[in-house]
Length: 161
Image (cartoon, rainbow, N blue to C red):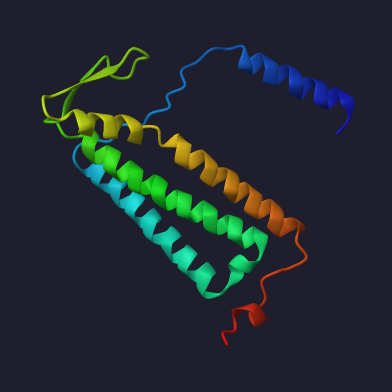
C-alpha cells in the first residue's frame, strides 16, 4: 500500500469518527418469543462450552498451555452465560423491584420490601462483563499460544490409553 492511499484511508476514517451518530448497544426482545429464543441461545452456549471442556479434558489436551487457556475461556463463558440467564430472568420479573429511569445513566432500582437481597444479586449479575472480558482474553491467549506453539493437534493425540 502506498503512502497516498494510506493517507486517503486515514482521512476518511478520521472524518467518519467526527460524524456523530446513534450507537445503540442494547438489544430489545419482543415478548415472549424474543426472550425465550435468547435464553435458549444462552443455554445452548452453556452446553457447547461444557462439551468443549469435557472434550479437552478427555483428550488430555490441557497439558498444553494453549488448550488450557481455551479451557479457562470456556469455563468463564459457561459462568457468564449462567449469569446472563439468571439476570434476564430477574429482569423480567415485576414482583422483585421497580426500575426508574431505565436506559439512562441515572437509572436506579427500588427493591420491594423483603426482596433486597434479590436486588443486590441482580445488580451484581448485571456486571457480567467481569466474566465475559476475561473469557475473551483467555480465548485470545489460547489462540496466540496455539499459533506460536510447535505442538499441533494430531490423530495420535486423540488416541486413548
